[in-house]
Every structure is written in C-alpha cells, then in structure tokens.
Image 1 (cartoon, one colour):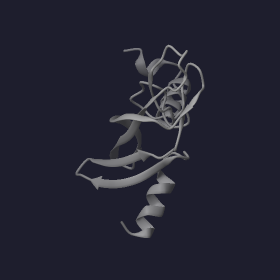
Image 2 (tube, one colour):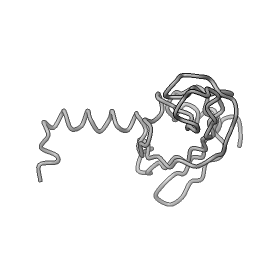
Image 3 (cartoon, rainbow, N blue to C red):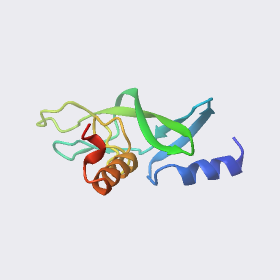
Image 4 (tube, one colour):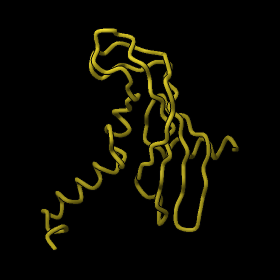
Length: 129
C-alpha cells in the first residue's frame, strides 16, 4: 500500500491508538478495512491485572460511518488473553478497545454517536413507523 493511501486511510479511520491498518478492499458498494489490535498487553476487565499471555485470536466485524456512498465494514483482528491473577474468576478475556467499539458491539463508537445525533435531531420520529 502506498504511503499516500496509508495516510488517507489512517485519517478516515477512528482515532485510536493500538490499531494498525493491514488491508483495504474496495468493492462495488462497500469498502472492507482490515485492522489489527497492536497493544502489547491488555487489562483484565474484572481485576485490572495486565497480561501479555495471548490465548487465541478472533475477528470482530464492525460497521463504521460510510465513506460517501460506500458502506464501510471493518474486520478487526483481536486477541484473547489469559488472566494471570490466580484469584480472578475470569480466566480468559478479550482485549478491550473502548475508544473504538464497546464490548460485543457491532458498530464503532463513531457510528453509534452519529445515529444518536440523528435520532435526537429528528425527535425520535425516524423510528416511529
């Protein structure tokens, strides 16, 4: 990927540290963007113990704000970590990206905020039907 395209894609993506752009696929009606979480450690959501022990990986698929008339689909490659606190009830946890997407969410925080602003501006009438 050229440096200019890399710079453009970085500007179009939500500003989040710890995420690297790996690939962009432009299709007829959508853009698929593949991202990888890059933080060296993650905090357990229950006990806040840092861990660098990777258990496994998986893909999260998220929707983001459209780029013009193209729908944006993000494929985020995230890791599961092993909690190193022996007294913690949670043994395995997924790295969190709170500025990017809520846990279990299928939309980025940017898209959620935009949809909330539209709903507020319309006074709730958009979903009245």
